[in-house]
Length: 149
Image (cartoon, rainbow, N blue to C red; front, side, top):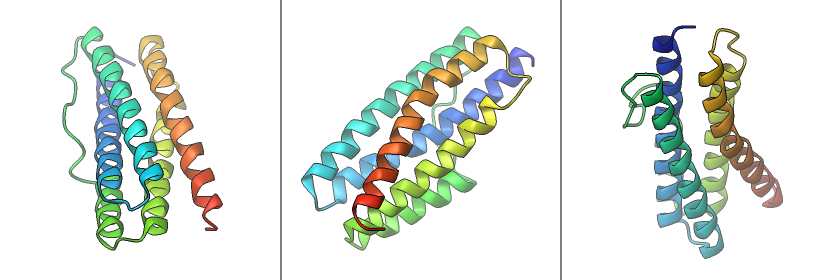
């Protein structure tokens, strides 16, 4: 895969991660449970670092890094659903939507990691961010199940 294709793949992941940061920030701001708010804030910060790392990788590959979320597609729909859950004031609904967003994000990263044409540098950058994605997915999945859903 050329650097241009790597850049496109990484930029897609960056946009999705930015959506994730925004989702966690919205959830942290509006959820009633202060412990959940702290968890969401911490996850947003971790994702922000993953975004920065991927943006740096895009620059190293000679590309212009994405700096905005995806205003179309699945990530945006998940974020809209999250906003609706938050405004409904139901913490369980918020956690369910956050976990759904994590499922979406995990799928995007798995697709990128399964791309046999991704260069070694591109793959290394994706794998580094994957640590945050996998950890966030697992945490939110456990949280969802601990709340009885």
